[in-house]
Length: 121
Image 1 (cartoon, rainbow, N blue to C red):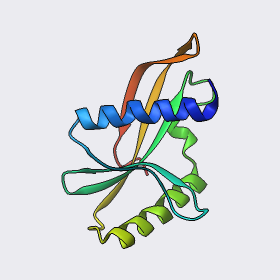
Image 2 (cartoon, rainbow, N blue to C red; image 1 turned 90 degrees about the horizontal axis):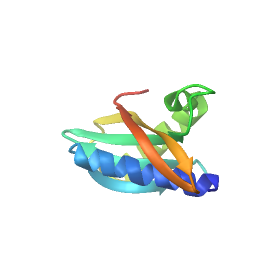
Image 3 (cartoon, rainbow, N blue to C red; image 1 turned 180 degrees about the vertical axis):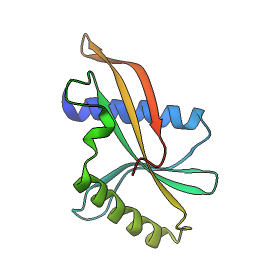
């Protein structure tokens, strides 16, 4: 399983989890120019949530959320403002991280845990 497929699988699992927990998915894989990408944009109550999904098979190099460093946070925030401006949305926003952990067996990812961190940064 290559990294792109692995990441996309994690994003599908995260989106399903968010929907089951009352979120409304507005967009997936939002891009603007060469700044980067926001994995999931969703609404929860009065918030527009900009969500980074990190999928891992182990915590050898830290938790998935720890992989969302300062530069990544900066790019997500810049993209969030572009989204808010282009969609004329209420700027009541939040930045979340969804950690998806599991195992790969026979080239298939099996999730074991999904953890939502609200207001992660």
